[in-house]
Image 1: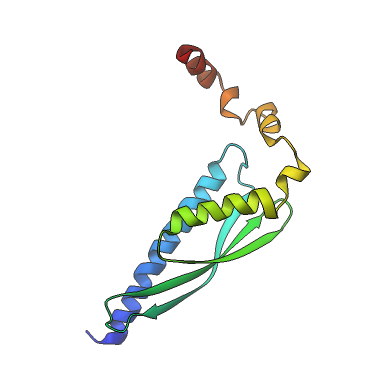
Image 2: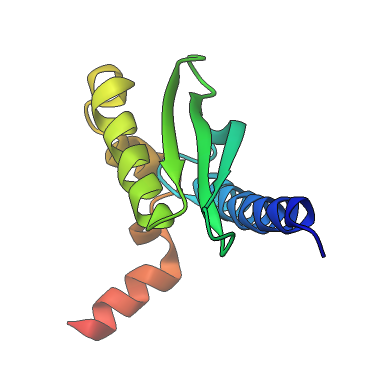
Length: 133
């Protein structure tokens, strides 16, 4: 197997891992009881630099977080080291600081509870809370 094939296989491996992670995070954002699918994570592009000894490489993905309600977007690049935690942390910072969702709705928990999306509003959760006390 020549070096070009190894390079493309390594890139594909990192790209598959990033695709799986983006799908997992999007499913989590869609199923989230508070935001209810308001945000979407997209990968804009990716770059791969192989190591000199061809044992692997450095993968860099350019991600975009989109607020589906307002259309606002925030961009960030992530590499292949400790990615999931860093992406989730970046999403939380974007939601709370850059998109100003707290400014437009100071208490989204109350709104979610009124719409029946808050976990404490479900009868099963209330029963569990009563049993826990």
